[in-house]
Length: 243
Image 1 (cartoon, rainbow, N blue to C red):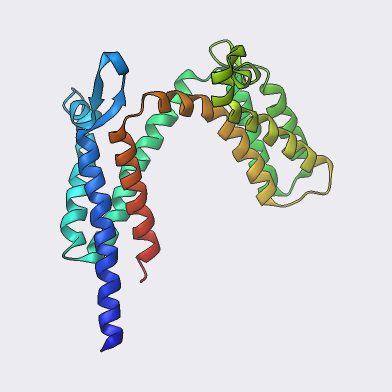
Image 2: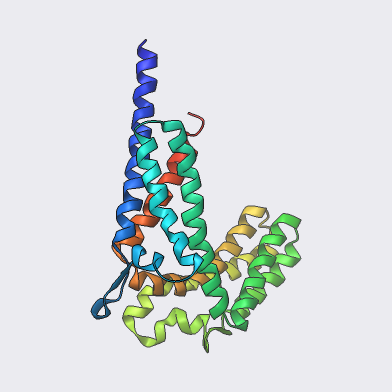
């Protein structure tokens, strides 16, 4: 009897957590997603009313959130499944939009760096140290070629001599660090797909960081609540699905 009571209590707790994540999605939808300072702000609700099916689909976020609230207090099992689906939809849409924006703005030097990163990951899968050396060298050279507009990764990492930008864009150096790590792995005895994958991910992280830093400047509370709620719903759903 006590074991059954304990199980019910755990289920209630999971449902309450998922309901809280759903509430974050609903509330966040009506708060500022982009805060433009003196130019005002734009909420998820504002964007969803714009023309185009892609904008209208943003309404799925609060709808999923409402479903999480309802199921969270009535059916924790369904709430878990909906939590996973919600995370995939919201975070997947965000990743798609970010990837599209980065691909549109990335110059030829950035694409060479991406190719180097792909080569580093492939070198781990194929256990080819020579490929890791070549790919690391390519990614390192690409760090000094145009990434966005006429600015190279090196230019961006230095922040154009502006102290505030230099601090904010410092993670761009991860790209060069990953390239060097991959090249060293190719020269030395460092083996394994994990090191190669880490090197490739560091290169990609450095390439993506200027976009992340720019978006962070205009992100409002609503955007953070929406993404945080979706991430929490996904994590809770996956972590407790077999419970």
